[in-house]
Length: 168
Image 1 (cartoon, helix red, strand yellow):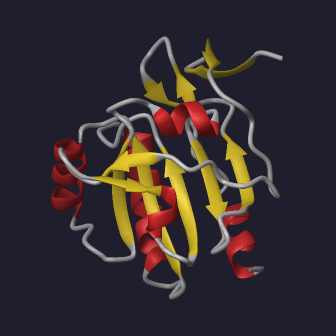
Image 2: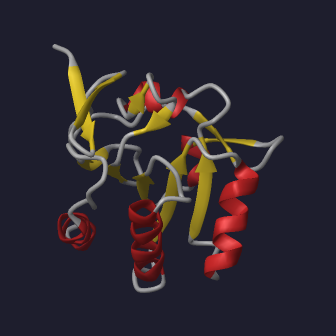
């Protein structure tokens, strides 16, 4: 079955599977910087939130990234990652400009080969961007929460993510 999302009402196809709670998180590599990759399994044996956005340089994506960053300091055993197809230098610039600096919060880039988007079902191939989504992955790399936001220009359900984290 073909999957899709909308961006300001315009429909776009999504590539990849629709992952659900209970699924194992796919093993993919993302860029930490222009030359270094990190595999999903190397992000730590803790609960992780992967907040997927089209670009940190857009208003809704910036809001989503900042909201999760604010929660990072309040949840001691959780790491937060923003995933986008932005170049790592753009992600670093954004974090610097917003004062986002923490070992519990990082931006990771899927620009190289779009592996995350293809494996997690968030890739909008026509735009070469990620759709908006949030995944909570436990220390055993099992997905505990998955939200694919149908309209890319709207924010995810933060309360559902936080409720999932509190239940772990």
